[in-house]
Length: 71
Image 1 (cartoon, rainbow, N blue to C red):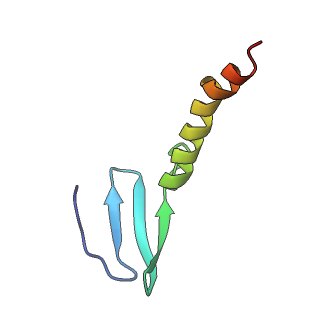
Image 2 (cartoon, rainbow, N blue to C red; image 1 turned 90 degrees about the horizontal axis):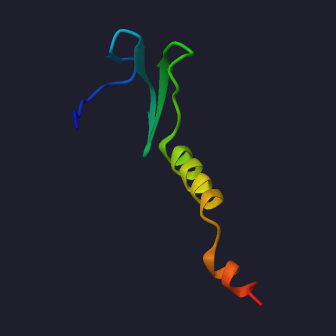
């Protein structure tokens, strides 16, 4: 993992197409701005994790519920 320090208004360039800019720092919160082509998805990690969890639930139904329905 690369760790960098930046101040408000400073940016980080990722590859040829993505620029991350520090917009604001207040207490424990940092506001980030991303400038990237629409073809590059940008998503909060916790939303991706929720999506993976939901897809897993659809593929693997609750086995306890299936057992409870047996005659």
